[in-house]
Length: 94
Image (cartoon, rainbow, N blue to C red):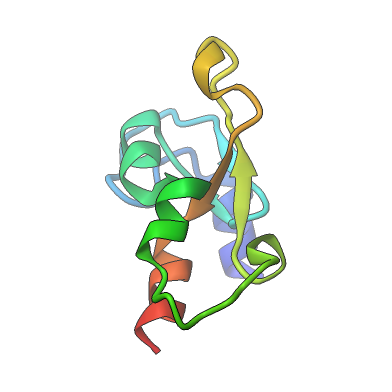
């Protein structure tokens, strides 16, 4: 419960502690500024490139937390899936 309360009521980025961050990625359970989003989330095609070839994971979205492009003004990435890389990286390293 304390972690959920922190997510809901604290307005700092969970990574760099930038103030007044309004964007919560509920699926990933993090509050994140735009700068840290670019560091902590990766597009689906980059995640595929980081997987060892021996892993045949067809439903990455069922294993790793992800969000859709939160930046509506960036038309080139509209609808693109971004995975929360720290969670995926832990899986890959195991």
